[in-house]
Image (tube, rainbow, N blue to C red):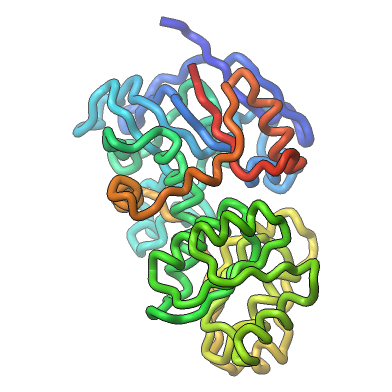
Length: 355
């Protein structure tokens, strides 16, 4: 057996490289997974730009699936060679935050997001799964690695954005930005019975995907103020809910402005790269008294969550794979990451395959 593996790391802020690292050994409650497929996330692009303080040489990635290579001595109920998916968020399920139901905040704010931030990520030939008994999920035979990889972050995050809208069937929701997370929110809004889904997006290819996934209306912000366009579409009434899936102060404010009194704003956008604080415009906020709710969250993890997402894939209720615009072998990971950084060639989501 080889003793080393290839890992895609942040060399220093602004630089990445592929390096050799020792294949890790599992602790008693951990597992080692041999990677078979992965997706690149824009969050990793933010990290390389310096949005998160991580040490030089830390392995990137948090959207990988594979087969169990080795199990820790205390991990039961799984076997080596089993295909598994692991969420980007891997809580301990023991701390106060986990026991209060906020598993994504395990051990502290955003603490469930361990890959890259607290430990090596999983854009490598092998990776560690902490609290493996709770964070490993077998992949049904009928589901491809590509489909399962979308459960790691995109689907669980996008669906959480919709869950935090507390939609009743037939309600109207606006989703700002149709990148992979926004598109996943569009899938979730359709699935949860939204009567009208207004997708805010300027790129024609992403507009087409939004319609394919259930958007009833497209608002192109390059053709006029999106708030005014949405208010016109709704006859001046506004929407019942809005999802911020871009991570920018202007879109956050727009969400507040398009929601009617008593509406819900759900934030799933990553705001770590913009140094400006988010504003609460008092007129859109009813001077703090118009019953609008703002809900934030980090993608829920754990095997129960993953099982439910896999069930939707297995039954054919959803299929996120049209988002996969490019496929690369792991030997071309640097090229794929550069394309994801510059959004070249209409890239939406690149699939990385491992030998």
